[in-house]
Image 1 (tube, rainbow, N blue to C red):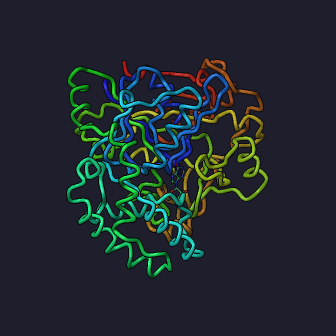
Image 2 (image 1 turned 120 degrees about the vertical axis):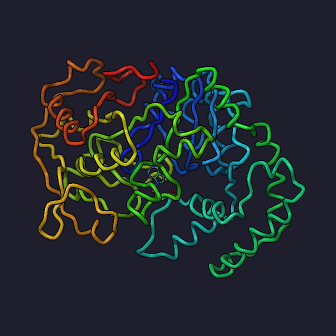
Image 3 (image 1 turned 180 degrees about the vertical axis):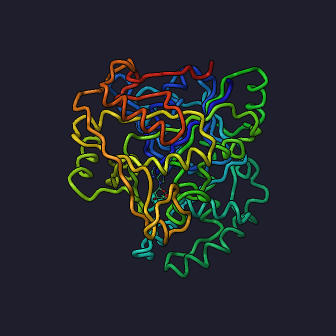
Length: 429
Ligand code: IMP
């Protein structure tokens, strides 16, 4: 196997950062292919917590190349602050260990303004975005008016491009009662950010092609989760990119037949930030307990995450849609003190049992989860490194999940620490 794609199988925050960090030890290059600085990846290394939102998690390892692919929308200010944050803790980001695709779309301050203004006006219908301009930046990309990194390297036609983007945004800014922007405002901004970013800009699809030809190991790092996919997620309460593993190909320029293995990261229960349907959400003491023990607060926004039981129907569906080969199960230890643990095994819709999540929002709001109750193991599992040392009831829980989702669980993470991980199958072998 020379390439592995990692994606979250729920609504994000499944603990991808730690798994990517662990696998990046074996990889030569770690590549992000969608999303932006809306992602939150937490790594705990030698007791030190590192929070990343834009840079590939592999950046924390020495001698690894990292790439931000063209599928990402990039906020240059967020990039600079993340680089500065890392440099303060002794991690150097240079054009040697970070390359950014020249055809990457830039997030401008006007995208953030629009994201926030819309959410404020939306009232009850708000998506609960991270407010970082991600959606508006993707909109401009598909509307063919965005400014890309290669435009910064060649400022020749930039004023025409700025005019085009402002034609659209000033209409919206007027409607949302935001100050109108001049071509010069945006031009000045681009001039300011240009010098810090240009050194990182590269033709990354060619770098990846060469690496592939030399049998180098490529790790594709997904952000968010499959239920936030703009096509197959709980639309419209989704992010604005495709989070499915196929995007690893489009968002980097590596052909789909070179994606060898797909690993889905799955939390042992379910969480969600922001609005939208969540069939197994708990509003009782158990939900509060999951949040408290699991420290379920958004990495990017600090918002409290909504918590619920493990929904096997959802994970089976996302695994099927995205062709997941194996699951990495995370945060099992959060369930250690629960006497009873539920797994959602089906839904009731209008009095009938169904085994999938309908794609229509009104139906999603109507479904009632059908649970299977399991006895908890009431034993501390945190830090266990051997599969056979897990308590029997925890092993039964894992086996049952595996059975329902019809996908092997081959990696188990038992704490936030880098070393607390069980591999049942070799990766990158
Ligand atoms: P946006 O990506 O900022 O447009 O937000 C759209 C939806 O995706 C909101 O519900 C966010 O809370 C959610 N979201 C975006 N990024 C993440 C993430 O990394 N983890 C979990 N939820 C996310």
